[in-house]
Amino acid sequence: MLKKTGKSKKTEKVIEGMLFIVAAIIALMFLFPMVYTVISSLKPLEDITSVPMRWIPREIRLRNFIEPFIEKNFGIYFFNSALVTTTVTFLSLFFCSLAGYSLTKFDYKGKNFFFILVLMTMMVPIEITIVPLAIIVRKLGWMNSYPGLIVPVAITPFGIFWMRQFMITIPKDYAEAGRIDGLSEFGIFMKLILPLCKPALGALAIFTFMGNWNSLIWPLIVASKDQYRTITVGLVAFEGEFFTPYNHLFAMSVVAVLPTLVIFLILRTKLIKGLAMVGIKG
Amino acid sequence: MAARPVPYFIRKRRLTGFLFFLPALIFIIIFLLGPIIVAIGISLTKYSILSAPKFVGFKNYIRIFNMPTFWKSLSITGIYIVSRLFFIFLIAFFMAAIINKRIPLAGFFQSAYFMPYVFPLAVTAIVWKIFYRPFGFIESLTNLFGIEVIGWLSSERTALIAVTITTVWSAVGYYSVIILAGLQTIPKAALESSAIDGANRFQTFFYIILPLLKPTLFYFIVVGTINSIRGFSPFLVMTQGGPGDATRVIGYMIYEYGFVYLKMGMGSAMSVILLIIILIFTLIQRKFFRYEGG
Image (cartoon, rainbow over all chains, first blue to last red; front, top):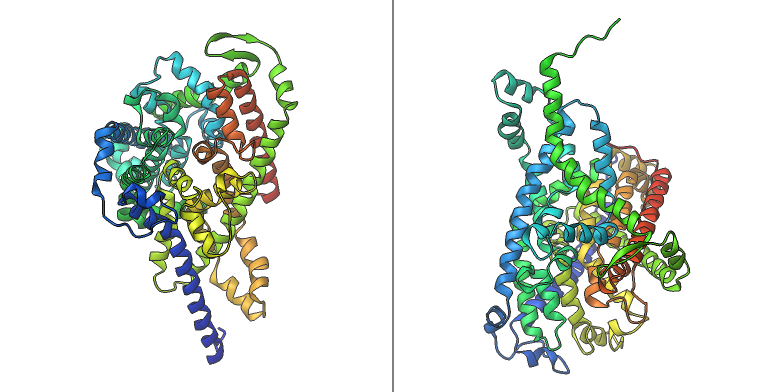
Protein backbone atom coordinates (compact mmCIF):
# COMPACT_ATOMS: atom_id res chain seq x y z
CA MET A 1 0.00 0.00 0.00
CA LEU A 2 1.02 3.51 -0.78
CA LYS A 3 1.21 5.65 2.32
CA LYS A 4 -0.22 9.09 1.73
CA THR A 5 1.87 12.05 2.88
CA GLY A 6 0.16 14.87 4.74
CA LYS A 7 0.62 17.22 1.81
CA SER A 8 -1.13 15.02 -0.76
CA LYS A 9 -3.96 14.48 1.70
CA LYS A 10 -4.35 18.24 1.91
CA THR A 11 -4.48 18.63 -1.88
CA GLU A 12 -7.05 15.83 -1.93
CA LYS A 13 -9.19 17.90 0.42
CA VAL A 14 -8.80 21.03 -1.73
CA ILE A 15 -9.72 19.10 -4.86
CA GLU A 16 -12.72 17.62 -3.10
CA GLY A 17 -13.85 21.10 -2.05
CA MET A 18 -13.51 22.41 -5.59
CA LEU A 19 -15.44 19.43 -6.94
CA PHE A 20 -18.17 20.11 -4.42
CA ILE A 21 -18.51 23.71 -5.59
CA VAL A 22 -18.65 22.72 -9.27
CA ALA A 23 -21.17 19.98 -8.45
CA ALA A 24 -23.32 22.51 -6.63
CA ILE A 25 -23.16 24.98 -9.53
CA ILE A 26 -24.22 22.28 -11.99
CA ALA A 27 -27.03 21.24 -9.67
CA LEU A 28 -28.23 24.86 -9.55
CA MET A 29 -28.16 25.03 -13.34
CA PHE A 30 -30.30 21.90 -13.45
CA LEU A 31 -32.76 23.01 -10.82
CA PHE A 32 -33.14 26.63 -11.88
CA PRO A 33 -35.33 26.00 -14.96
CA MET A 34 -37.60 23.84 -12.80
CA VAL A 35 -37.88 26.47 -10.10
CA TYR A 36 -38.57 29.11 -12.73
CA THR A 37 -41.30 26.92 -14.23
CA VAL A 38 -42.98 26.48 -10.86
CA ILE A 39 -42.79 30.21 -10.13
CA SER A 40 -44.18 31.03 -13.57
CA SER A 41 -47.09 28.65 -13.03
CA LEU A 42 -48.12 30.86 -10.11
CA LYS A 43 -47.79 34.20 -11.93
CA PRO A 44 -50.41 36.37 -13.56
CA LEU A 45 -49.82 36.32 -17.33
CA GLU A 46 -48.45 39.88 -17.51
CA ASP A 47 -45.63 38.99 -15.13
CA ILE A 48 -44.35 36.40 -17.64
CA THR A 49 -44.70 38.44 -20.81
CA SER A 50 -43.58 41.83 -19.53
CA VAL A 51 -40.25 43.28 -20.73
CA PRO A 52 -38.05 43.12 -18.76
CA MET A 53 -39.34 39.98 -17.13
CA ARG A 54 -40.67 40.13 -13.58
CA TRP A 55 -38.84 37.37 -11.66
CA ILE A 56 -40.87 37.64 -8.47
CA PRO A 57 -44.64 37.51 -9.05
CA ARG A 58 -46.77 40.38 -7.71
CA GLU A 59 -49.45 37.96 -6.59
CA ILE A 60 -49.71 34.19 -6.32
CA ARG A 61 -52.37 33.07 -8.73
CA LEU A 62 -53.54 29.55 -7.88
CA ARG A 63 -56.40 29.83 -10.36
CA ASN A 64 -53.86 28.93 -13.09
CA PHE A 65 -54.23 25.37 -11.90
CA ILE A 66 -58.03 25.34 -12.04
CA GLU A 67 -59.01 27.38 -15.10
CA PRO A 68 -57.53 24.99 -17.71
CA PHE A 69 -59.63 22.17 -16.27
CA ILE A 70 -62.78 24.26 -16.73
CA GLU A 71 -62.03 26.11 -19.95
CA LYS A 72 -60.19 23.24 -21.66
CA ASN A 73 -60.37 19.45 -21.54
CA PHE A 74 -57.37 18.91 -19.29
CA GLY A 75 -59.40 16.64 -17.01
CA ILE A 76 -60.00 14.26 -19.92
CA TYR A 77 -56.35 14.43 -20.98
CA PHE A 78 -55.16 13.41 -17.51
CA PHE A 79 -57.72 10.64 -17.27
CA ASN A 80 -56.63 9.27 -20.67
CA SER A 81 -52.95 9.39 -19.73
CA ALA A 82 -53.61 7.62 -16.43
CA LEU A 83 -55.73 4.92 -18.05
CA VAL A 84 -53.41 4.24 -20.96
CA THR A 85 -50.25 4.32 -18.87
CA THR A 86 -51.41 1.99 -16.09
CA THR A 87 -52.91 -0.51 -18.54
CA VAL A 88 -49.77 -0.58 -20.67
CA THR A 89 -47.58 -0.98 -17.59
CA PHE A 90 -49.51 -4.00 -16.30
CA LEU A 91 -49.68 -5.65 -19.72
CA SER A 92 -46.02 -5.01 -20.32
CA LEU A 93 -44.85 -6.36 -16.95
CA PHE A 94 -46.86 -9.53 -17.39
CA PHE A 95 -46.03 -10.36 -21.00
CA CYS A 96 -42.40 -9.25 -20.88
CA SER A 97 -41.63 -11.33 -17.82
CA LEU A 98 -43.52 -14.30 -19.27
CA ALA A 99 -41.44 -14.04 -22.44
CA GLY A 100 -38.26 -13.49 -20.46
CA TYR A 101 -39.02 -16.55 -18.36
CA SER A 102 -39.58 -18.59 -21.50
CA LEU A 103 -36.22 -17.48 -22.89
CA THR A 104 -34.25 -18.40 -19.77
CA LYS A 105 -35.75 -21.49 -18.19
CA PHE A 106 -37.03 -23.55 -21.11
CA ASP A 107 -35.41 -25.37 -24.01
CA TYR A 108 -37.24 -25.50 -27.28
CA LYS A 109 -36.57 -25.11 -30.95
CA GLY A 110 -36.36 -21.50 -32.07
CA LYS A 111 -35.56 -20.12 -28.63
CA ASN A 112 -32.25 -18.63 -29.69
CA PHE A 113 -33.85 -17.25 -32.81
CA PHE A 114 -36.52 -15.57 -30.67
CA PHE A 115 -33.86 -13.96 -28.52
CA ILE A 116 -32.08 -12.63 -31.60
CA LEU A 117 -35.45 -11.32 -32.80
CA VAL A 118 -35.86 -9.45 -29.52
CA LEU A 119 -32.35 -7.98 -29.76
CA MET A 120 -32.90 -6.95 -33.37
CA THR A 121 -36.26 -5.28 -32.83
CA MET A 122 -34.93 -3.56 -29.71
CA MET A 123 -32.62 -1.54 -31.95
CA VAL A 124 -35.43 -0.32 -34.22
CA PRO A 125 -36.49 3.25 -33.41
CA ILE A 126 -40.19 4.02 -33.73
CA GLU A 127 -39.41 6.47 -36.56
CA ILE A 128 -38.87 3.45 -38.81
CA THR A 129 -42.24 1.97 -38.04
CA ILE A 130 -44.65 4.84 -37.34
CA VAL A 131 -45.86 5.28 -40.92
CA PRO A 132 -46.73 1.60 -41.55
CA LEU A 133 -47.85 1.16 -37.93
CA ALA A 134 -50.36 3.96 -38.45
CA ILE A 135 -51.60 2.21 -41.60
CA ILE A 136 -51.96 -1.12 -39.76
CA VAL A 137 -53.77 0.50 -36.85
CA ARG A 138 -56.08 2.35 -39.23
CA LYS A 139 -56.86 -0.96 -40.99
CA LEU A 140 -57.70 -2.46 -37.57
CA GLY A 141 -60.11 0.45 -37.03
CA TRP A 142 -58.22 1.56 -33.91
CA MET A 143 -57.60 5.20 -34.78
CA ASN A 144 -59.07 7.44 -32.08
CA SER A 145 -59.61 4.58 -29.62
CA TYR A 146 -58.07 3.23 -26.43
CA PRO A 147 -56.91 -0.04 -28.04
CA GLY A 148 -55.07 2.08 -30.59
CA LEU A 149 -53.32 3.98 -27.81
CA ILE A 150 -52.57 0.88 -25.74
CA VAL A 151 -52.04 -2.30 -27.75
CA PRO A 152 -49.29 -1.25 -30.19
CA VAL A 153 -47.06 -0.18 -27.28
CA ALA A 154 -48.07 -2.90 -24.78
CA ILE A 155 -44.91 -5.02 -25.13
CA THR A 156 -41.39 -3.78 -25.66
CA PRO A 157 -38.42 -5.88 -26.77
CA PHE A 158 -36.44 -3.95 -24.20
CA GLY A 159 -38.78 -5.22 -21.47
CA ILE A 160 -38.30 -8.80 -22.60
CA PHE A 161 -34.54 -8.32 -22.74
CA TRP A 162 -34.56 -6.69 -19.31
CA MET A 163 -36.52 -9.51 -17.67
CA ARG A 164 -34.42 -12.16 -19.41
CA GLN A 165 -31.21 -10.56 -18.14
CA PHE A 166 -32.55 -10.66 -14.62
CA MET A 167 -34.12 -14.13 -14.74
CA ILE A 168 -30.95 -15.68 -16.10
CA THR A 169 -29.48 -15.18 -12.62
CA ILE A 170 -32.24 -17.21 -10.95
CA PRO A 171 -31.14 -20.82 -10.38
CA LYS A 172 -33.16 -23.55 -12.13
CA ASP A 173 -33.73 -25.24 -8.74
CA TYR A 174 -36.60 -22.92 -7.90
CA ALA A 175 -38.69 -24.19 -10.79
CA GLU A 176 -37.71 -27.79 -9.96
CA ALA A 177 -38.83 -27.33 -6.37
CA GLY A 178 -42.15 -25.99 -7.62
CA ARG A 179 -42.59 -28.96 -9.92
CA ILE A 180 -41.96 -31.37 -7.07
CA ASP A 181 -44.60 -29.50 -5.08
CA GLY A 182 -47.00 -30.12 -7.91
CA LEU A 183 -47.41 -26.55 -9.14
CA SER A 184 -48.33 -26.01 -12.78
CA GLU A 185 -45.76 -24.30 -15.00
CA PHE A 186 -47.84 -21.13 -14.95
CA GLY A 187 -48.22 -21.43 -11.18
CA ILE A 188 -44.43 -21.70 -10.83
CA PHE A 189 -44.08 -18.55 -12.88
CA MET A 190 -46.67 -16.57 -10.92
CA LYS A 191 -45.94 -17.83 -7.39
CA LEU A 192 -42.21 -18.60 -7.37
CA ILE A 193 -40.46 -16.74 -10.16
CA LEU A 194 -42.24 -13.38 -10.23
CA PRO A 195 -41.74 -12.66 -6.50
CA LEU A 196 -38.01 -13.22 -7.01
CA CYS A 197 -38.03 -10.64 -9.79
CA LYS A 198 -39.36 -7.79 -7.69
CA PRO A 199 -36.37 -5.46 -8.19
CA ALA A 200 -36.38 -5.99 -11.95
CA LEU A 201 -40.16 -5.68 -12.14
CA GLY A 202 -40.11 -2.51 -10.07
CA ALA A 203 -37.55 -0.90 -12.33
CA LEU A 204 -39.34 -2.04 -15.48
CA ALA A 205 -42.63 -0.73 -14.10
CA ILE A 206 -41.06 2.70 -13.63
CA PHE A 207 -39.46 2.70 -17.08
CA THR A 208 -42.71 1.64 -18.70
CA PHE A 209 -44.84 4.05 -16.72
CA MET A 210 -42.48 6.94 -17.41
CA GLY A 211 -42.02 6.04 -21.04
CA ASN A 212 -45.75 5.93 -21.69
CA TRP A 213 -46.74 8.86 -19.52
CA ASN A 214 -44.11 10.87 -21.37
CA SER A 215 -44.68 9.59 -24.88
CA LEU A 216 -45.89 12.03 -27.50
CA ILE A 217 -45.46 10.77 -31.05
CA TRP A 218 -47.63 7.66 -31.01
CA PRO A 219 -50.61 9.16 -29.10
CA LEU A 220 -50.33 12.25 -31.32
CA ILE A 221 -50.83 10.05 -34.38
CA VAL A 222 -53.63 7.92 -32.92
CA ALA A 223 -55.62 10.62 -31.13
CA SER A 224 -56.71 13.38 -33.45
CA LYS A 225 -59.98 13.74 -31.56
CA ASP A 226 -59.85 15.76 -28.36
CA GLN A 227 -61.56 13.09 -26.27
CA TYR A 228 -58.69 10.59 -26.79
CA ARG A 229 -55.81 13.01 -26.29
CA THR A 230 -53.30 12.20 -23.58
CA ILE A 231 -51.78 14.95 -21.46
CA THR A 232 -48.69 15.42 -23.65
CA VAL A 233 -50.78 15.62 -26.83
CA GLY A 234 -53.23 17.97 -25.12
CA LEU A 235 -50.40 20.23 -23.95
CA VAL A 236 -48.79 20.37 -27.39
CA ALA A 237 -52.14 21.20 -28.97
CA PHE A 238 -52.71 23.85 -26.28
CA GLU A 239 -49.29 25.36 -26.93
CA GLY A 240 -50.00 25.43 -30.66
CA GLU A 241 -53.16 27.49 -30.30
CA PHE A 242 -53.21 31.07 -31.55
CA PHE A 243 -53.39 32.57 -28.09
CA THR A 244 -52.02 30.45 -25.26
CA PRO A 245 -51.88 31.89 -21.72
CA TYR A 246 -48.33 30.95 -20.71
CA ASN A 247 -49.22 30.84 -17.03
CA HIS A 248 -51.84 28.15 -17.75
CA LEU A 249 -49.35 26.27 -19.89
CA PHE A 250 -46.75 26.35 -17.13
CA ALA A 251 -49.30 25.25 -14.54
CA MET A 252 -50.44 22.28 -16.62
CA SER A 253 -46.81 21.38 -17.33
CA VAL A 254 -46.17 21.23 -13.60
CA VAL A 255 -49.17 18.95 -13.09
CA ALA A 256 -48.17 16.76 -16.07
CA VAL A 257 -44.74 16.24 -14.54
CA LEU A 258 -45.99 15.37 -11.04
CA PRO A 259 -46.80 11.63 -11.37
CA THR A 260 -43.42 10.59 -12.74
CA LEU A 261 -41.65 13.00 -10.42
CA VAL A 262 -43.33 11.60 -7.31
CA ILE A 263 -42.57 8.03 -8.37
CA PHE A 264 -38.97 8.95 -9.01
CA LEU A 265 -38.58 10.67 -5.65
CA ILE A 266 -40.02 7.68 -3.80
CA LEU A 267 -38.23 4.90 -5.68
CA ARG A 268 -35.04 6.72 -6.55
CA THR A 269 -32.51 4.22 -5.27
CA LYS A 270 -34.29 1.28 -6.89
CA LEU A 271 -34.40 3.06 -10.22
CA ILE A 272 -30.75 3.95 -10.16
CA LYS A 273 -29.77 0.42 -9.09
CA GLY A 274 -31.81 -1.00 -11.96
CA LEU A 275 -30.11 1.24 -14.44
CA ALA A 276 -26.73 0.19 -13.15
CA MET A 277 -27.65 -3.44 -13.80
CA VAL A 278 -28.30 -2.78 -17.48
CA GLY A 279 -25.17 -0.70 -17.80
CA ILE A 280 -22.98 -3.57 -16.69
CA LYS A 281 -24.73 -6.40 -18.45
CA GLY A 282 -25.96 -4.90 -21.70
CA MET B 1 -28.34 -45.84 -33.15
CA ALA B 2 -31.86 -44.57 -33.28
CA ALA B 3 -32.61 -41.49 -31.24
CA ARG B 4 -34.48 -42.23 -28.08
CA PRO B 5 -38.00 -40.82 -28.06
CA VAL B 6 -38.21 -37.61 -26.05
CA PRO B 7 -40.11 -38.25 -22.81
CA TYR B 8 -43.61 -36.80 -22.66
CA PHE B 9 -42.98 -34.42 -19.78
CA ILE B 10 -40.05 -32.84 -21.58
CA ARG B 11 -42.06 -32.36 -24.76
CA LYS B 12 -44.82 -30.80 -22.71
CA ARG B 13 -42.38 -28.49 -20.98
CA ARG B 14 -40.97 -27.41 -24.34
CA LEU B 15 -44.45 -26.60 -25.56
CA THR B 16 -45.14 -24.60 -22.37
CA GLY B 17 -41.96 -22.62 -22.91
CA PHE B 18 -42.99 -21.84 -26.44
CA LEU B 19 -46.52 -20.87 -25.38
CA PHE B 20 -45.08 -18.46 -22.80
CA PHE B 21 -43.25 -16.65 -25.57
CA LEU B 22 -46.15 -16.78 -28.03
CA PRO B 23 -47.93 -13.52 -27.02
CA ALA B 24 -44.66 -11.62 -27.35
CA LEU B 25 -43.98 -13.32 -30.68
CA ILE B 26 -47.38 -12.37 -32.10
CA PHE B 27 -46.90 -8.83 -30.85
CA ILE B 28 -43.44 -8.53 -32.40
CA ILE B 29 -44.70 -9.88 -35.72
CA ILE B 30 -47.72 -7.55 -35.96
CA PHE B 31 -46.39 -4.35 -34.43
CA LEU B 32 -42.62 -4.42 -34.98
CA LEU B 33 -41.57 -6.81 -37.73
CA GLY B 34 -44.76 -6.40 -39.76
CA PRO B 35 -44.42 -2.63 -40.02
CA ILE B 36 -40.85 -2.97 -41.25
CA ILE B 37 -41.97 -5.33 -44.01
CA VAL B 38 -44.97 -3.10 -44.76
CA ALA B 39 -42.62 -0.11 -44.85
CA ILE B 40 -40.45 -1.82 -47.46
CA GLY B 41 -43.56 -2.66 -49.49
CA ILE B 42 -45.08 0.81 -49.29
CA SER B 43 -41.76 2.45 -50.06
CA LEU B 44 -42.12 1.02 -53.58
CA THR B 45 -45.51 2.67 -54.07
CA LYS B 46 -47.10 6.06 -54.40
CA TYR B 47 -49.51 6.12 -51.47
CA SER B 48 -51.55 8.64 -49.56
CA ILE B 49 -54.51 7.86 -47.31
CA LEU B 50 -56.79 9.36 -49.94
CA SER B 51 -55.85 6.99 -52.76
CA ALA B 52 -54.91 3.31 -53.10
CA PRO B 53 -51.17 2.52 -53.26
CA LYS B 54 -49.74 2.48 -56.79
CA PHE B 55 -46.56 0.52 -57.53
CA VAL B 56 -43.76 2.79 -58.73
CA GLY B 57 -40.63 0.66 -58.21
CA PHE B 58 -37.61 2.51 -56.87
CA LYS B 59 -38.87 5.93 -57.93
CA ASN B 60 -39.27 7.14 -54.33
CA TYR B 61 -35.68 6.18 -53.51
CA ILE B 62 -34.34 7.90 -56.63
CA ARG B 63 -36.31 11.02 -55.77
CA ILE B 64 -35.08 11.00 -52.19
CA PHE B 65 -31.43 10.58 -53.19
CA ASN B 66 -31.84 13.56 -55.53
CA MET B 67 -33.39 15.71 -52.82
CA PRO B 68 -30.92 18.23 -51.33
CA THR B 69 -33.20 18.56 -48.29
CA PHE B 70 -32.77 14.84 -47.55
CA TRP B 71 -28.97 15.07 -47.52
CA LYS B 72 -29.16 18.23 -45.48
CA SER B 73 -31.45 16.46 -43.03
CA LEU B 74 -28.99 13.57 -42.71
CA SER B 75 -26.09 15.91 -42.03
CA ILE B 76 -28.12 17.89 -39.50
CA THR B 77 -29.04 14.63 -37.77
CA GLY B 78 -25.37 13.64 -37.73
CA ILE B 79 -24.27 16.99 -36.30
CA TYR B 80 -27.02 16.82 -33.73
CA ILE B 81 -26.15 13.30 -32.57
CA VAL B 82 -22.38 13.84 -32.41
CA SER B 83 -22.53 17.18 -30.62
CA ARG B 84 -25.27 16.01 -28.27
CA LEU B 85 -23.42 12.81 -27.29
CA PHE B 86 -20.15 14.71 -27.00
CA PHE B 87 -21.56 17.17 -24.49
CA ILE B 88 -23.57 14.51 -22.70
CA PHE B 89 -20.43 12.42 -22.27
CA LEU B 90 -18.36 15.34 -20.99
CA ILE B 91 -20.94 16.42 -18.44
CA ALA B 92 -22.14 12.92 -17.52
CA PHE B 93 -18.61 11.65 -16.99
CA PHE B 94 -17.85 14.60 -14.77
CA MET B 95 -21.07 14.04 -12.80
CA ALA B 96 -20.32 10.34 -12.42
CA ALA B 97 -16.77 11.05 -11.26
CA ILE B 98 -18.05 13.49 -8.63
CA ILE B 99 -20.66 11.07 -7.34
CA ASN B 100 -18.04 8.30 -7.32
CA LYS B 101 -15.83 10.47 -5.06
CA ARG B 102 -18.58 10.43 -2.43
CA ILE B 103 -18.40 14.15 -1.77
CA PRO B 104 -20.94 15.49 0.74
CA LEU B 105 -24.51 15.65 -0.65
CA ALA B 106 -23.57 13.32 -3.53
CA GLY B 107 -26.98 11.67 -3.39
CA PHE B 108 -28.75 15.01 -3.60
CA PHE B 109 -26.65 16.11 -6.57
CA GLN B 110 -27.31 12.86 -8.37
CA SER B 111 -31.06 13.30 -7.94
CA ALA B 112 -30.91 16.89 -9.13
CA TYR B 113 -29.03 15.87 -12.29
CA PHE B 114 -31.34 12.95 -12.92
CA MET B 115 -34.62 14.75 -12.33
CA PRO B 116 -35.13 16.34 -15.78
CA TYR B 117 -34.98 12.84 -17.28
CA VAL B 118 -38.25 11.85 -15.60
CA PHE B 119 -40.14 14.79 -17.15
CA PRO B 120 -42.05 14.14 -20.35
CA LEU B 121 -39.79 15.28 -23.19
CA ALA B 122 -42.77 17.00 -24.80
CA VAL B 123 -43.37 19.05 -21.64
CA THR B 124 -39.67 19.88 -21.37
CA ALA B 125 -39.75 21.00 -25.00
CA ILE B 126 -42.86 23.16 -24.50
CA VAL B 127 -41.44 24.81 -21.40
CA TRP B 128 -38.04 25.44 -23.02
CA LYS B 129 -39.73 26.81 -26.11
CA ILE B 130 -41.23 29.50 -23.89
CA PHE B 131 -37.85 29.93 -22.15
CA TYR B 132 -36.27 30.71 -25.54
CA ARG B 133 -38.84 33.36 -26.44
CA PRO B 134 -37.42 36.81 -27.25
CA PHE B 135 -37.00 38.64 -23.92
CA GLY B 136 -37.84 35.37 -22.15
CA PHE B 137 -36.12 33.37 -19.41
CA ILE B 138 -32.99 32.36 -21.34
CA GLU B 139 -32.40 35.79 -22.83
CA SER B 140 -32.86 37.41 -19.43
CA LEU B 141 -30.07 35.12 -18.20
CA THR B 142 -27.73 35.43 -21.18
CA ASN B 143 -28.13 39.21 -21.12
CA LEU B 144 -26.48 39.12 -17.68
CA PHE B 145 -23.40 37.64 -19.38
CA GLY B 146 -23.53 40.13 -22.23
CA ILE B 147 -24.68 37.56 -24.81
CA GLU B 148 -27.35 39.12 -26.98
CA VAL B 149 -29.45 36.80 -29.07
CA ILE B 150 -32.94 37.81 -30.00
CA GLY B 151 -35.00 34.69 -30.58
CA TRP B 152 -32.88 31.57 -30.08
CA LEU B 153 -35.31 29.40 -32.00
CA SER B 154 -35.94 31.80 -34.87
CA SER B 155 -32.33 32.12 -36.02
CA GLU B 156 -30.73 29.45 -38.24
CA ARG B 157 -27.48 29.86 -36.35
CA THR B 158 -28.84 29.15 -32.90
CA ALA B 159 -31.94 26.95 -33.33
CA LEU B 160 -30.10 23.62 -33.41
CA ILE B 161 -27.88 24.67 -30.50
CA ALA B 162 -30.96 25.66 -28.52
CA VAL B 163 -32.67 22.30 -29.04
CA THR B 164 -29.43 20.46 -28.26
CA ILE B 165 -29.07 22.34 -24.95
CA THR B 166 -32.60 21.31 -24.06
CA THR B 167 -32.14 17.62 -24.87
CA VAL B 168 -28.75 17.48 -23.16
CA TRP B 169 -30.29 19.03 -20.03
CA SER B 170 -33.08 16.52 -20.18
CA ALA B 171 -31.02 13.31 -20.48
CA VAL B 172 -27.51 13.85 -19.15
CA GLY B 173 -28.39 12.68 -15.62
CA TYR B 174 -29.56 9.34 -16.99
CA TYR B 175 -26.33 8.79 -18.86
CA SER B 176 -24.29 9.80 -15.83
CA VAL B 177 -25.85 6.87 -13.94
CA ILE B 178 -24.80 4.48 -16.70
CA ILE B 179 -21.26 5.85 -16.71
CA LEU B 180 -21.15 5.74 -12.90
CA ALA B 181 -22.06 2.05 -13.03
CA GLY B 182 -19.19 1.54 -15.45
CA LEU B 183 -16.77 3.45 -13.25
CA GLN B 184 -17.71 1.31 -10.28
CA THR B 185 -16.71 -1.85 -12.13
CA ILE B 186 -13.13 -0.59 -12.43
CA PRO B 187 -11.10 -2.44 -9.82
CA LYS B 188 -9.49 -0.13 -7.24
CA ALA B 189 -6.25 -2.07 -7.67
CA ALA B 190 -5.92 -0.87 -11.26
CA LEU B 191 -6.17 2.76 -10.18
CA GLU B 192 -3.84 2.31 -7.22
CA SER B 193 -1.15 0.57 -9.24
CA SER B 194 -1.27 3.30 -11.86
CA ALA B 195 -0.80 5.85 -9.06
CA ILE B 196 2.19 3.88 -7.79
CA ASP B 197 3.64 3.87 -11.30
CA GLY B 198 3.48 7.66 -11.16
CA ALA B 199 0.77 8.17 -13.77
CA ASN B 200 -0.87 11.57 -13.72
CA ARG B 201 -4.62 12.12 -13.93
CA PHE B 202 -4.71 12.35 -17.72
CA GLN B 203 -2.62 9.22 -18.18
CA THR B 204 -4.81 7.34 -15.72
CA PHE B 205 -7.91 8.51 -17.59
CA PHE B 206 -6.71 7.59 -21.08
CA TYR B 207 -4.75 4.41 -20.33
CA ILE B 208 -6.62 2.87 -17.42
CA ILE B 209 -10.17 4.23 -17.11
CA LEU B 210 -11.19 4.55 -20.76
CA PRO B 211 -10.10 1.04 -21.86
CA LEU B 212 -11.85 -0.49 -18.85
CA LEU B 213 -14.97 1.53 -19.66
CA LYS B 214 -15.21 0.08 -23.18
CA PRO B 215 -18.39 -1.97 -22.63
CA THR B 216 -20.06 1.02 -20.97
CA LEU B 217 -18.96 3.31 -23.79
CA PHE B 218 -20.32 0.91 -26.36
CA TYR B 219 -23.65 0.85 -24.59
CA PHE B 220 -23.58 4.63 -24.23
CA ILE B 221 -22.93 5.30 -27.90
CA VAL B 222 -25.43 2.76 -29.26
CA VAL B 223 -28.23 3.70 -26.88
CA GLY B 224 -27.39 7.40 -27.09
CA THR B 225 -27.48 7.41 -30.88
CA ILE B 226 -30.74 5.52 -31.10
CA ASN B 227 -32.34 7.66 -28.39
CA SER B 228 -31.19 10.81 -30.19
CA ILE B 229 -32.81 9.63 -33.42
CA ARG B 230 -36.04 8.52 -31.80
CA GLY B 231 -36.40 11.52 -29.50
CA PHE B 232 -37.45 13.97 -32.19
CA SER B 233 -40.45 15.36 -30.31
CA PRO B 234 -38.47 18.48 -29.19
CA PHE B 235 -38.04 19.31 -32.87
CA LEU B 236 -41.73 18.80 -33.50
CA VAL B 237 -42.67 21.02 -30.57
CA MET B 238 -39.95 23.66 -30.63
CA THR B 239 -39.01 24.30 -34.26
CA GLN B 240 -40.97 22.06 -36.66
CA GLY B 241 -37.76 21.63 -38.62
CA GLY B 242 -37.22 25.36 -39.05
CA PRO B 243 -36.17 28.04 -39.42
CA GLY B 244 -35.63 27.03 -43.05
CA ASP B 245 -34.22 23.49 -42.81
CA ALA B 246 -31.94 24.26 -39.88
CA THR B 247 -33.39 21.65 -37.51
CA ARG B 248 -35.11 19.23 -39.88
CA VAL B 249 -33.69 16.01 -38.41
CA ILE B 250 -34.46 12.74 -40.17
CA GLY B 251 -37.00 11.53 -37.60
CA TYR B 252 -39.03 14.69 -37.95
CA MET B 253 -38.75 14.60 -41.75
CA ILE B 254 -40.21 11.08 -41.83
CA TYR B 255 -43.03 12.21 -39.56
CA GLU B 256 -43.65 15.19 -41.83
CA TYR B 257 -43.85 13.12 -45.00
CA GLY B 258 -46.04 10.49 -43.39
CA PHE B 259 -48.44 12.63 -41.38
CA VAL B 260 -48.26 16.24 -42.57
CA TYR B 261 -47.83 15.86 -46.35
CA LEU B 262 -49.50 12.39 -46.19
CA LYS B 263 -46.94 10.97 -48.64
CA MET B 264 -46.75 7.50 -47.07
CA GLY B 265 -44.61 6.05 -49.89
CA MET B 266 -41.92 8.70 -49.55
CA GLY B 267 -42.07 8.55 -45.75
CA SER B 268 -41.65 4.78 -45.77
CA ALA B 269 -38.76 4.93 -48.21
CA MET B 270 -36.99 7.34 -45.85
CA SER B 271 -37.69 4.99 -42.94
CA VAL B 272 -36.09 2.12 -44.83
CA ILE B 273 -33.02 4.20 -45.64
CA LEU B 274 -32.75 5.20 -41.98
CA LEU B 275 -33.08 1.56 -40.91
CA ILE B 276 -30.22 0.56 -43.22
CA ILE B 277 -28.06 3.42 -41.91
CA ILE B 278 -28.72 2.33 -38.30
CA LEU B 279 -27.89 -1.29 -39.14
CA ILE B 280 -24.58 -0.39 -40.81
CA PHE B 281 -23.75 1.96 -37.97
CA THR B 282 -24.46 -0.67 -35.30
CA LEU B 283 -22.34 -3.26 -37.14
CA ILE B 284 -19.41 -0.84 -37.46
CA GLN B 285 -19.59 0.02 -33.78
CA ARG B 286 -19.75 -3.63 -32.85
CA LYS B 287 -16.61 -4.35 -34.87
CA PHE B 288 -14.84 -1.24 -33.64
CA PHE B 289 -15.44 -2.01 -29.99
CA ARG B 290 -15.11 -5.80 -30.32
CA TYR B 291 -17.94 -6.01 -27.89
CA GLU B 292 -18.38 -9.21 -25.97
CA GLY B 293 -21.31 -9.50 -23.64
CA GLY B 294 -24.37 -11.39 -22.53
